[in-house]
Image (tube, rainbow, N blue to C red; front, side):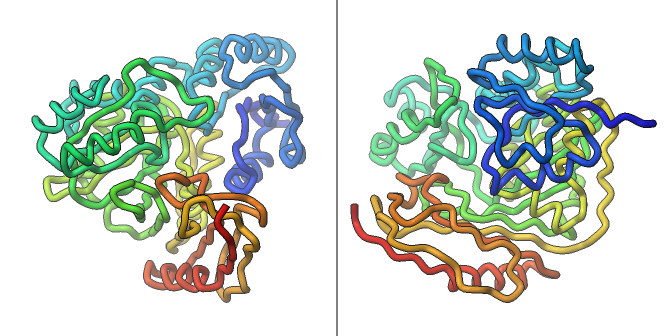
Length: 408
């Protein structure tokens, strides 16, 4: 009898965005989960769980993992939560498991360390300078030339990122970049990067890395809105995207992983496609968010959860596609700051994949920049044969969304 590998999963994230991963993994792996409260919907997928006071405390989680490992050997550690990937690496390190290189994960978690590593390896990227004050930022911007990007050192999902065209705009947006934070994000004394503006269109690539071999399995094209902010309002994953055969792009991807010495795990790499070629924006040591891996699953048949579980347990992932479709997601927002929702819902849409309200009547929300990703009131996903057909289905979903609200 072959025993399923025993996988320790740290936290889950929102059910709407992550349940499909647990559903995929559960038949092939025995999952034990570390959480900070009793599991609810997760229980049907779990072999066991441990409730901890915090899933950010690396020492406490290492102690709990050692106790669990003494009872039942842990074969791999998996985390897709940005705030917890570093603590999870401490567990893998303590147990001698793949991905147990804390410095490797931190080179992705800390965007300044990423830039330093990429620069040392000669990987193409925008010029980037870490600054402490607005005066330093102004001096760097003068040196780089406007427009420039202000970017927090250790956030994700384009939070706090803003494009500025002049000293006046830089001063006006300094606090947005410097002070934007999220619960459980790491704190640094020097928080902001001033970066050269890379003109082009942005993509992301989710890859499985097994013993140093980098294999991309999901390429998404971002849809950015609310300029000068970089709110990600949608994504498209095309299984037949010609960029998947772009040798220059794939070489940059491989070189970027060599630069940060990434050997085992899953990454979500963001790249700007410019007239000068691809330039790396950042490397995240986790699966992509915003339903991107789900779109890849629907478009290609490659299961991101199973891929992540495999490399976490030191096993080669199965990344063989079995279909050629296009998946898309679009996020929706209110029009004005401090809008109190009175009602929200979708009419039926033929051919829609998911139509999901994210908020309820009575909640208050705002569009970007005040709202950022937490300002989203709903999302829709669609799957089709072509990008145009997929976009048309998302357009239909947008027309089917009905909400009413009033000022707070």
